[in-house]
Image (tube, rainbow, N blue to C red; front, side):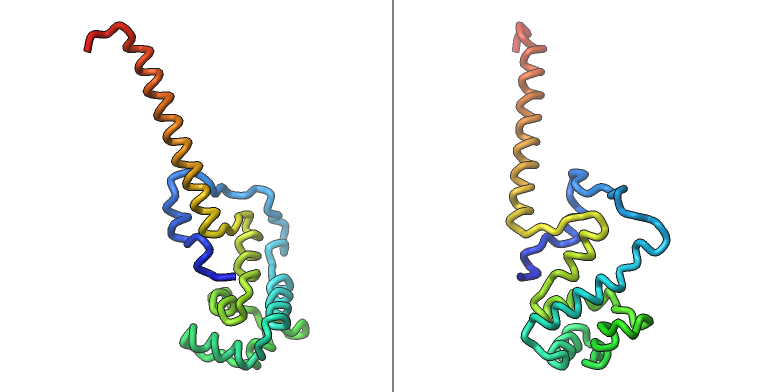
Length: 153
């Protein structure tokens, strides 16, 4: 999965249609938004299936982030016994690129009640948006024509 396939956050924020609304179904009970175990599980599974060692992942993340990242740090973030070691969300993109697994980003977006879409899906939405704009314009023109029936031009 390639990160360039996903619609940029800036383009989502600049959209003129209210496509993204607050999801009231998100649970807001105490502790219900603590995603530590979810994040830990995704990171552990991504590492297991990416074919790279923790050292290789750490080296690539360190290069991408320009800060120190070690295999030991990654191990601390994934160990169930180290609850107080929390994964920094600012590392999500670098981790996804290093492992080639974008589930962590998708999970965070979907946990917030939104959907991740591909560039093709974004273009499809834009086609639909433009179609609706055109259809509404045609309806407005037809209404104006009816109102102006018999008016000398």
